[in-house]
Image (cartoon, rainbow, N blue to C red; front, top):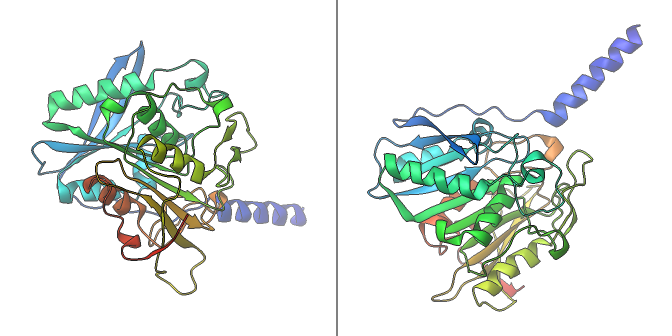
Length: 330
């Protein structure tokens, strides 16, 4: 009996070790968290919007999409409330929508979650959400940006492929485009400023491409490699295959992860940047906070939230960690 109790204790300890993450305190900010809702395609849809005390006029909008089994609240915490802090500083609105049954209907045709099986119109929902935000606030429809983790990153790809007129840039994290055989979206062929942040040790979304698996579920099918995904967006913008590779300075000499980035930039063309986190997992890089070990290593080499907003705000011209560090082409 004692042995069984010890075994249960050890199992719970191992489970805690893999599933626990660093606690994140809500920052004290002057703005407000405003819930929103509407009915779209006969489905009730909801979101949370962080509206800073002082808005730019007109205000940019950053849509932040949760991953599989996530929620608006969970995504706010997973991004360490960073977009709220930056919104307060720079006067934009950060919006956290909820998917149907905690998923988005992204471009992976074979996925078995409800949003995909029932072909939920998430593009239409997000467009209607923006219309409601515009009715309540003076927003800049030419500066609407989308980021997301995993399933949320895949939804960002869908918006860029099918409704580029709605948005001005995307920043998927831990997500790659589906292979042609698994692509459930129709591309308009329009170029889009794109920042991709992927880890080489991501056990869910393989950096080199291949089958996506989530807790043993392989229904999401295969994706392209991270480099091929970036090259797809670069080709739409008229860039060549070879981007400019940058090595990033390491913040800590004994860091487990390191960072490089490949840039496709030219005057008059949409910029594309692939940030590669060597040994990084299915996680959002952050200087101090760690996500669950089950998802792999969280890089502490940079703040992904700050990087994403810098990319959006500068029109894709600012990648702080890579400044002045070009090496050979990719």
